[in-house]
Image (cartoon, rainbow, N blue to C red; front, top):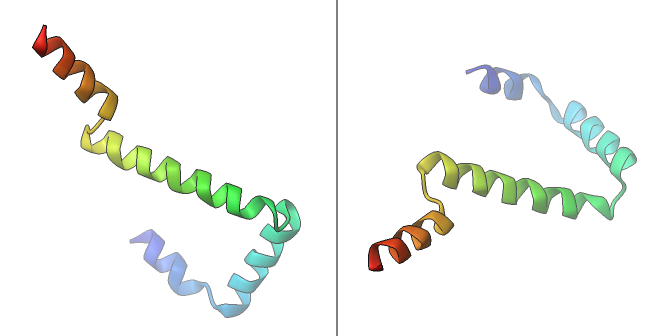
Length: 66
């Protein structure tokens, strides 16, 4: 709910200012690396919240086979 209110309050000028500040702080070369890391982190968080850990599944299967 709060996120939708904040997004509704951000207009085009605010978004442009945020993008400019991010570019000034990190530079153009670092942005793809940051986004890639953010995406991996979000994927790991989703998997962990679902309880889907690939390493745990393979370890459990190996233990069951013994």
